[in-house]
Image (cartoon, rainbow, N blue to C red; front, side, top):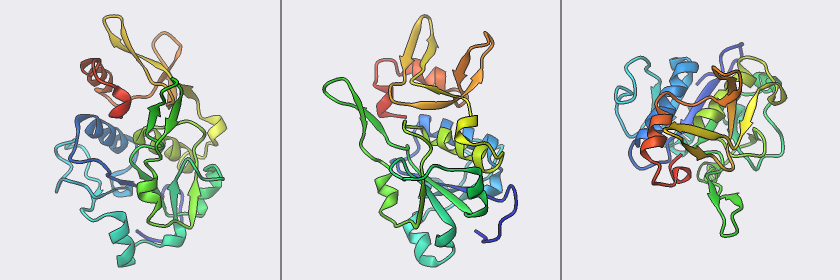
Length: 224
């Protein structure tokens, strides 16, 4: 993993928390591989021997072991490892690029769900990784993020030097799924970009709109 800092040396580690490799998960992982260089993108508890089921255009570092197992081997400098955690008291800043070698995301940052009264809350999916024990934690803001959004946000902060306040976001967007249908992503925040109409739209993995359209009868919040 290494312990010396240089610009563009941050490693981004994702602990795979799902059973198997669902389509939505593959789309998010492929998206990550499009902006994080392969030698700096790490997956732990990965259920496949290669990345080819996701894409043949990238070969990130894959470990079948969990983060906890890797911690016991001593290959990670734990004092220079940071967990992305909604419950952290400090936000991620560009200065953190000089403090850490590895940023860790485990599953979704919050795993939003709907309460009986119609409000939204988190069942704290990050707890599955937090229990490994981290000396350093940072948050990315108050709303939930999909894992690829969390990594894209972290990449813009740590590799591109932007503060969270300088990154355009769109909160709880309605995502057009075609034929007049849309999915409202209650409780979620996405990195934003200008669409063809000049309006802000969420940055989504290629193929995610189509998957949402196919999943209109399901609760997409249970999957992402």
